[in-house]
Length: 133
Image: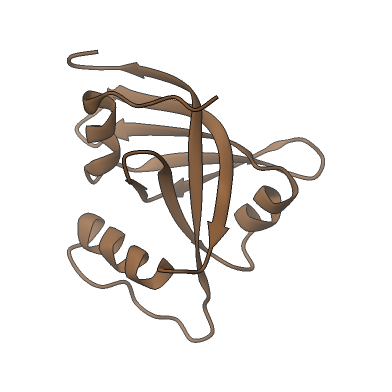
């Protein structure tokens, strides 16, 4: 069952705050990667590239966990457990450029042969701590 994020929780995803995305390896162990995150009002959006471990793990098991902490206060945080409900290439380059501007202030460097993909994550369990929560 999908969970709607509060405005305060959404702010953490909309700001230039890094996330730690956990996926499940074939042997059941966790794999964690630092990621840039976005939010479209329903889904948490993560952008990655084909050929990496995250897409292989998600294609096999869509369950993920994500923690996002405020860049200036690691105790201001959002934890989400959910499922990747869509994986798409559509709009992925535009999306990574948008994230790159949010985090770096410039376009994302295009690498020859790189195919970007988007994960749409449906939050199913949310925990947050910080101002106003």
